[in-house]
Image (cartoon, rainbow, N blue to C red; front, side, top):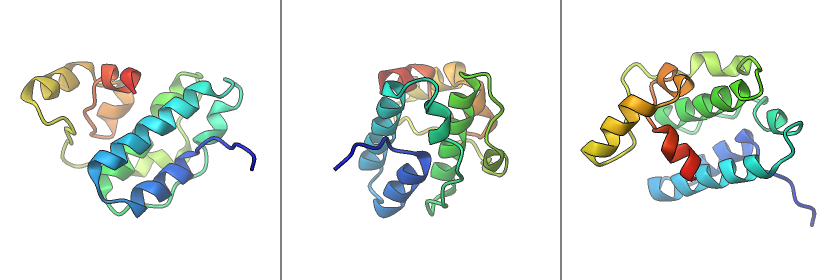
Length: 126
């Protein structure tokens, strides 16, 4: 068996197969960790192909925000598929009011654009 890093397509399939939000977040953190370990020249290829819908527009918007945020770190335009995945109402995944306030202040621009308020610290801690 040969190692292959998780792509956003793989992540979306795993999110769709599991409805437990705690496990879904673990999968997101796993993707981000694998992404960090890939050579910088290979990282953008993990984001380009449009993932199938997860079945929950919040998670679909999160995938788009992740792709746009990570592409920007390479000074690349966001993948074309990310443009349509924007929430009409903001989503604050954090449960505690203090975490929500932190996310409101520190959410990266790509996440704000897609309506997902997740603190930059939460992304780095993953």
